[in-house]
Length: 268
Image 1 (spheres, rainbow, N blue to C red):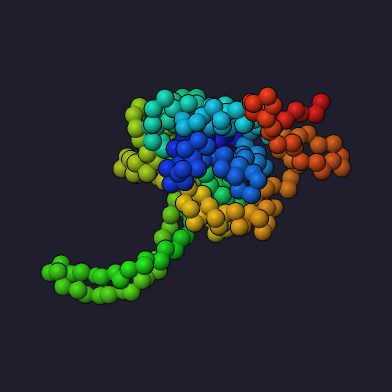
Image 2: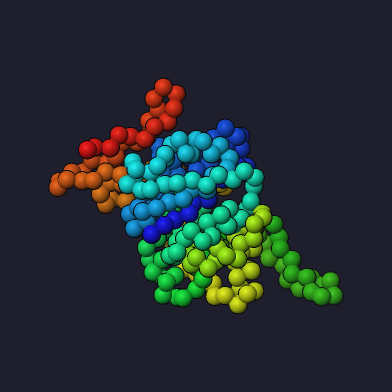
């Protein structure tokens, strides 16, 4: 299977930290969030990952290189100008022949990616959106105003519940054909698919999901990861290393030599 990771954003919500550091390399514990995602994808059957980069692209490309350290094939598509969350995918139209994942490179989750893909294929939809139920407390009194301007109800600091997009999608190649060659966001793609009579399915995730671009979520992500990293890091044979019977060693992390980032050497 193949996955497309969106990693080109500037991470404005985490400034000034992301002014000189790309958000996908922001650590959860001592592991970059994108590394956690790549290890999860590998554990669920993904072998080819295309990372769409933009802001500080060279740091992401230097850290992950060709992906061999994680047992993956990784290639990159650089944005020369901002194209939104869906616009860069246009460049891949015609090059993908099977269903694939699209996901943001700045989220922490224990989503079962393989189950998401099974659900997508069984549904027959052109796209499937992973959803999460989230509650938000409104720290204000909320008024319900009728058509005449009269107050019809009053809720003091209500807690609202929403089904939100996790920023993880399973898609069929046909979805790429609808993306125009310009700035274009993923919500617009979903709305345009629906307007064209295409079916868009949903896949509810009842586990853990955090958007680390939000300050509160980033703090919570670090807390959860510190408490139980095994929830997020696969226990299967370590990505990037062929194991011999009884071997339990995890792969070396990429390290810097002479001022440049290199992938760990693989055993021969």
